[in-house]
Length: 247
Image (cartoon, rainbow, N blue to C red; front, side):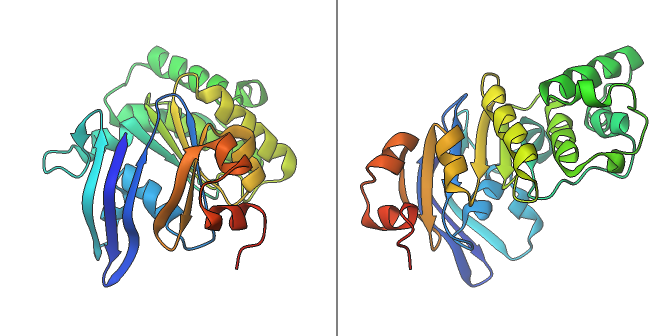
C-alpha cells in the first residue's frame, strides 16, 4: 500500500494534511503521536471506515496493489475483507464463540459445516486462542476475558483471509499479560499478513514494529525504520516526543 499527499476533512476541520507513507508487505508499521493527531483517522482511511461519516471528504492518493482505494469502482465489501480491522476495545458479536468466527465466511458464501469448522479451528489457532476455547465454542463470546475477547476479534478478522490487519490501539484496555500475548501474536501474524498498529505506547512500537510513523496535528512528521526513529530521529519534534520533552 502507498499513501501519497492524503488530505481528509470532517466538515470544515482538516484532520489529515498531506500525509505520505508506504505500508510494507509482511511488516509491522506503527503509528505514534499524541491524542488527536490523526493516527486512527489515517488507518480508518485504509479500509474506508471513514465513509461512514457523512461530512468526511478525502483527497490525495491511497493505492492498494496499485489500484486507488478511493477510485469509483472500488468494491467496499471486498476491500474490507482484504483489509481487516481490530478496534481499541474488544467488540465480539453477541453470539457464540463459533458464530463470531463463521459470521464473515457465511456472508461471503461459505455454508458447508466441515469447511466452516476448519475455518474456526484455523482462525482460533492463528489467534493463539484454540487451546483455551476448543471445548466451549458454543458458549457466549462475552464469557471470555477481555484479552481473550480481543484475540477472538483477531480470529474473526482472520477468518475471511485478509491481506492487511489494521489494529487501532488493540491493547489499551488490556492488562500487561494480555498485552504481551497480543504483541507476540502481532509478531507471529506478520509472517502471513501485513500489520498496521496505532499505539500510544512508544515502548510497544519499539518492541514489535519494523517501521514507525510519528504524527502531529494531522501531519506525518517523520516516517522510517523503527530503530532509527527511536535512536536517531531526523526531526527535532520527533526526538522531543520520544524522549518525553514534548509540549
